[in-house]
Length: 94
Image 1: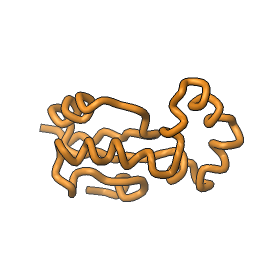
Image 2: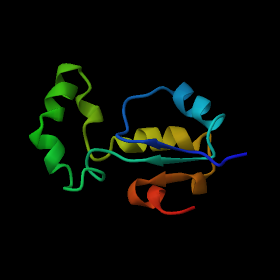
Image 3: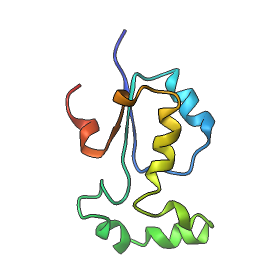
C-alpha cells in the first residue's frame, strides 16, 4: 500500500524484461543520465573518464545524450506516460 518510485540513474543498457519486471513492482519511474543528471551537462562525468569505460566494453552508443531514450521507450511499453518521468521532473513531489 506504499507508493514506490524507482529511479534509474544513470540509464544503462538493459533488456525489455527489466522494464517489464519493474512494472510489477513500482508505480512510477524516474530516468536520468550522465548528461542531464550530473549537474554540469555531462562535463563532470566526462572528466572522470566514463566514456572510456563504455568504449572498452563496446557500449559506446550507450554513452550519448540520447541513450536514455532507449530505456525510456522500453518503460513506456509497460507504464502509462504520466508515470515515466525524466530527470528533475521525477524528483518533484507526486
